[in-house]
Image (cartoon, rainbow, N blue to C red; front, side, top):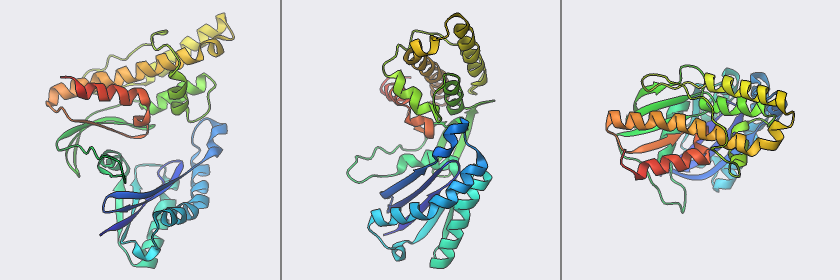
Length: 294
């Protein structure tokens, strides 16, 4: 039996989890509301909030798992990539905890962890773990990548964004519409009652398997600006349709390259990872893709 304490502090969420033989016993997350007023993450404020949150979050994770500190065999922490100040808080805590309890530290790559999260088991939940090799669409606020996973630590990136990430496109477009940060979950919620075919936005024509979202952000900004000149209430009157149409555009861009990658590699097993993978439209699209012949 192996019990591991995991620490994640790469951006603006302070998280701690307890895993026993690969099964999650607890998973505690402290989000930071302070960034909402700024429409994005402020690194200095994030690191300060991590310092305030990390001890209560770890304590609650241990309590909820029903174990004692003496039962923990190792501590895993995010080494990077991420915000330097935020990473430093998690790393410093992990070092102190490991030294005090004489247990080993395991450094974890943030992006690899997104992919390997597909192997985590939850009590009472049927596990659907991919088998090697499989293709992963990794989408978050800072990354949009296509990765062939040959083994647990043998990964090959075959496509990536050349500018902005999908999550950033969601957040910046949400800000244009006056929605709170983070905008991705808000757009997902509002899009459920909108018409995804109401508005058509430009899609980039990037060769190969690379992505680009900067053009979509710019065209969306100009579209909203022009429509507001005609009708100052345009956003309020069309908010759900705007969210649904924007979401459909982003998902279509992601899926087009994912299908192309599957054809080129011949790999039919597909997984998704990263914060944007929580988007319901993306999940549905990938699920449908896995059910058809690519």
